Image (cartoon, rainbow, N blue to C red; front, side, top):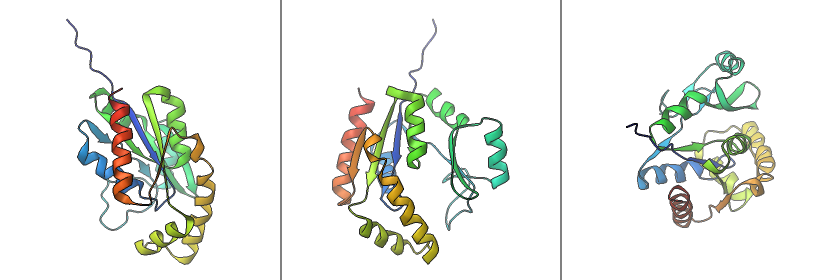
Length: 193
């Protein structure tokens, strides 16, 4: 008799940078059994404390382009010139085949692309900052942005906010504890359905 393993579902978290999606994802990973983080690939340099194969798969822009040419990504995007982010097909299959649920922390276009490909097997959640001003303060507090890169990010935020109504669920991260409770409720309902 053959045993059939139930394939995991996909949980997609997208948001403008600094909205708190990574904090919510980390919280859920500790609270919900059977979740496994989908490690994205990117072409940027690691930030202090980030590890290859744990936080991201760090690739050069040329390596990233080669993998694009080989159709090795479920989704990918050149967010800024020579700054690519994407999800490897092999990562999705590895986790789903174990029966675990994948958790994605991706940009809005990537999130919507995954949702389009996987349909009802995926839940797309948009995490929204309470305001552009609050987001600017969060980005400044990180101390990872130059004046120019901050302005570039804030322009991108306005663009990304235009996609919020295309997602299955919206979490406004004004109060972190409230956002955590909302995320936990949305996710557990989806994976148990």
